[in-house]
Image (tube, rainbow, N blue to C red; front, side, top):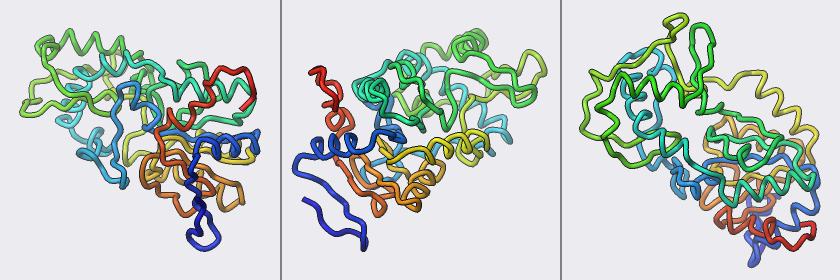
Length: 290
């Protein structure tokens, strides 16, 4: 059923939403795909927000706190030491595979992901921009050296062997919920080249996305004929601005998300299903185009 929504905008939640999504994709062969945490929950990586777009847990660490406080870095890396093994072993799910099929069919202008897990690439997608960076690398904030996260995990473990026995619930983005633990004696390595601060190669809250990355993404948006949002509430402006720009340019925007998004009034189609259910037709295996 389609009902008038926000003036001239129609928010369509159809009796057969997967069918209407299939039609949307068929009509628009140059899709700018924007993905969020909802794509990776079936891979065992928790998301941040509830159905109303609010935080499910404490807000993530900020760039300012991480760079300004040694105690914040101790807490972050201790939780990461415990949480990384499960995060690093996550594998692509049906959502990642469906979007790689869409690219293989030649219908993806660019996939811009807010996730830092690299699961789109692991599923076979090649036209990907990691808007918020990648958690599988560690960056020196002094000399810009990049180190594989698995290698840094070994250094953390060697300096803090007692922490390896701790168990904790998985949290988003390689974090772990360690409660009632003192972090003051956790030993955080410095850069071996310049003794600089080591930080995951991701964009923290309060940190700007690199300008050239934003410019590259907008270049692809300008060549697209529609936007498909998958698994994002768009509450973070760094992702929302692309939908905002698309709507201003008259591009139709479809979103697959369970719950409210920041862009609800800008959408021409909204499918409130799990991402895997909504995109399942792409993996039907019937050999026919979508």
